[in-house]
Amino acid sequence: MTNGITERLVEFALGTDWERLDARTREAASTTTGNVLALATAGAIHPAVERAMAAVGDLGAGDRVPVLGRAEHTTPMWAALLHGIAAHAEDFDDTHPPTVVHPGAPIVPAALAGAQIAGADGRELLTAVAVGTEVALRLGLALTPHAMDRSWHMTGVVGGVGATVAAGRAMGLGPRELGHALGFAATQTAGLLETLGTMAKPLHPGKAASLGVEAALLARAGLDGPAAPIEGRRGLLALLRPDLAGPQESDASVLTEGLGSVWELESNEVKPYACGVVSHPIIDLARELRAELGAGRGVAEVRLEVHPLVPSVMGRHAPGTGLESKFSAAHCFAVGLVRDGGGPEDFSDTAATDPALSAVRDRCVLVPDPTLGRYSVRARIVTDQGTVLERSVDGARRLDTEQVRDKARGLTAPVLGPLHEEFVDTVFTVEKLEDVSRVTETGRAVLAPR
Image 1 (tube, rainbow, N blue to C red):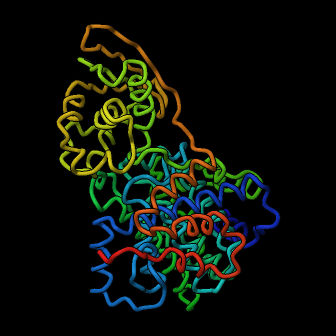
Image 2: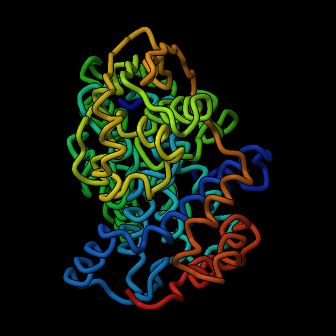
Image 3: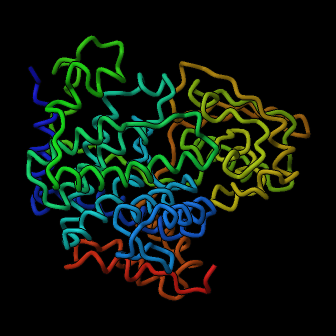
């Protein structure tokens, strides 16, 4: 006996109409989509994407759709993989604070691929992003913090389910087909926190995106799956919530309560810094301290009191690579204090070994405090002149719509050159497109081949 959670998610995904969404929900879908498409284009030059592109060729991918930010073409499913990796490679995408899920990187590429397969318009693409993101985030709420505490990477875990909803909606699957597709996604759920600081982490949203397209295509071809892959006795909730013995509807009410009227999507936030999100308040605090002390003043001791999750995922003290530095709270503090920064250039291999940053990192101590919120920091700083300062930040900075567009312009200009303005205008007004192929047409690399 099933409690119908999977069925209700399918009904929601296929029954949502773009025209009936309110302005705030539409804006959230548009912002998430534009930000990810810009990141996927800018990330096309990342070494992880270069290597994945070579692997795609070895795996026998066909030649059908353009890859954002590159000259090559590949199949929609492999394009989703590459776009997902590229969008998350710099850890600069988006975050749903309650779950620490980064939904855009797995879901937008899957929705784009599904829309390209179906020849859908921009409104359908955005609707697919909206419903796919909502399902992923609600599943994240049902699993948080239990799955994360057991070292599951939430983006990898829920991203494939959301990507399947997005791809299936964009491709026009029926209720039965989408239900089967969710079964294919649920049975392939994966993602380990052990991957933090390596290229395997952006592989999670890439694989989730390609999984979504694959699952939708398999279901469309007639493969069948379980009736209750989410809520079944041996389904996804039971596996990742071992504290529950056979989840009942009340245990997972967050998955369906207010579905279609209350949108977690609206709480999704675009990242202002290219690193683990729980360290963003630390960068804010360090930048405020820099403004207060002046660039020429140093620190002798830094005590950072943070939620226990922060040292768990951001505890690297002496990162050796740029990817590792993205998961070093001490490096994040140093970047804010020394450089007033937080962009991708501050988490490069060169920055990771910058002596000025290393010197500040060496003076930082992380102290876990379970009474603090996940996005809070309380600091005690001793300056090099012996002055003791106590400062705190509660909550991460959120970008407004124009700041997100400015971010997209800065990211895409090095790849698209003078055409980057047209691309940014296109991806932030997707609802106007009659054919979503316009996204990849305007997002082709125009600079010298790499």
